[in-house]
Length: 224
Image 1: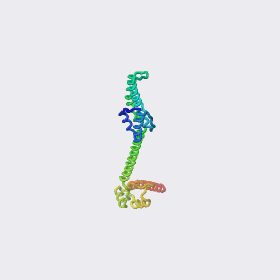
Image 2: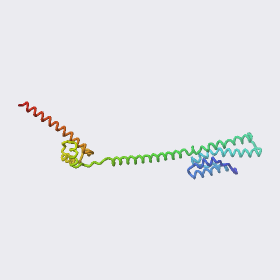
Image 3: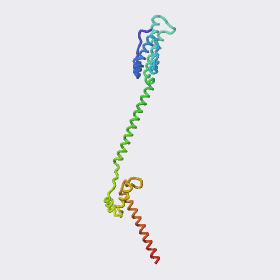
Image 4: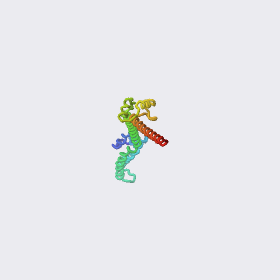
């Protein structure tokens, strides 16, 4: 049993990175119990990993203390107390360096889990923003697209007069009113384009009629 021991700052730096307060409290008790009384305590995985790397410094300190007592009492185990003291003096420094690395190793799983959760949250936010932007874009297109308004017969007649065609405005309006202003199966988007289509069809029909009339006249002339 010992009356005291050294608690290095590196112990504290490593232990305070444990997330659970219960683990932190347990490892403090375990260190004190082991250093003063030599008792080993059952710990959780994370706390146990830190304690396993702290233990060599506690053992080295105990050997150093025992060596000092042996020197003063004149007892020796075969090696000089000075050599044993030199060897044990090096151990805490090396172990302290290892302890500084403990949190990164023992808490790596917890850090990775936290990082993965953050990545998932970012991905969800990105998907939400993308959905909102896409929805707004679709709504913007819908609003910006001109809504079709059926023309009046006067508007059709005025447009036909402007183009100088012979499309019958009344027949045009009656035809499309009967089918719900559709071109084929699709809703009409531009009635002026439909007028131009009728214009071309009428011109083609007139050309065919003129050709037929000329052919009939020629046949009648030959028959005489």
